[in-house]
Image 1 (cartoon, rainbow, N blue to C red):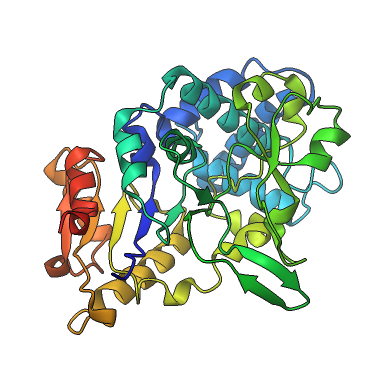
Image 2: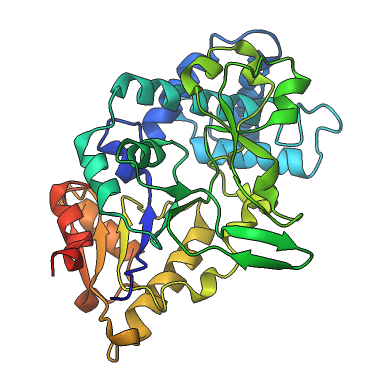
Amino acid sequence: MTRPFRLIVLGAGFSCAAGLPLADELWREINKRAKLLQGRAGNFNRDLESFIAFRKATSGRQLKRREVNFEEFMSYLDVEHYLGLRGSDTWSDDGNEGTIVAKTLIGRILSECESRLGEVPALYREFASRLEPGDTVLTFNYDTLLERALEAVRKPYRLFATRYSKVEGDFGTLVEDTEVAILKLHGSIDWFDKSDLEKWGVNTSSMGLAPVVDGPSFPEEPLAKFHRVRHLHEAYADHRMFMAVPKMLPPSAAKFAYAPTLTTFMRGLNNAGVLNFGMAVIGYSLPRHDQYALQILHTLIENYQTQYWEKPAFDRPKTPLVVCDLLSSAKREKAFLKRYKFVDWKRAVLHRDGFDQAAIQSIFAEQEH
């Protein structure tokens, strides 16, 4: 029987069911912690004051600190850094102080949340156990919950698009797919450039470093220079981690300024969904600052719902697209459906109760036949 080759897209709502914070909750905690920072990391507060002054000058509105929109603030900093408006007064190639501190605090907060979980919740272990070799998960999340779930059920996975047994020049020998592919489109709280850690004197000996790409790769593979920090909670306790930024795209409309290292995942997505036999979108509400994600999801879903639908490829019919989100009111559902108006709901199933056991049963329904 042909393998299912599912395509699953994850947003923050996937991890929310485990108690990890959504964007607004995350921003409140970042804001709270940033107020206490001193030294160069304390310049986050200067950057925030600069943004508030900018908004007053350009819109006439005097924002209070708690009223600042996180994504707008990050976009402001990205534009400032990318265009060099501050000159050479920046922290790293990944952004200025405000951006770096925000990324580090995101990593610290999420790692603490995951640490408090202890054992991976049963819901996520069940989800991981249903995934099969050849399935691809595209995730916009920074956390490592899915990786931990797959490890808990001893399911092989990789964090890069293609595994090769050998790479010579422009050619690579493909390995038969025995893994679930997790493509983290916005990066990860446990990804670091080892040279950055060493540059700032961070002791890496106890971090459990492991390469993100654990096999042969082409020289232009941007993920090849990144390492995973396996002992994450302990690592973020080191104050020098504010200098060695995790490799993540900030929650900003201008995130493409820093996307070249992750565009390897985007190549070829134009054809994704055509020959997939199952597809799901879990907890991704298409936020306005991720306009490019709208193009990605539109392409994937259109491919899935129109190509080889009436006449299945390889005699394997496609199952309905499963869209799962927490739609707790009619107003919220109306807004959600408006954002997803390109979906053919005659070929889709909508789960309104968030990521739960019923959603898992629907996503993997064809396994029961």
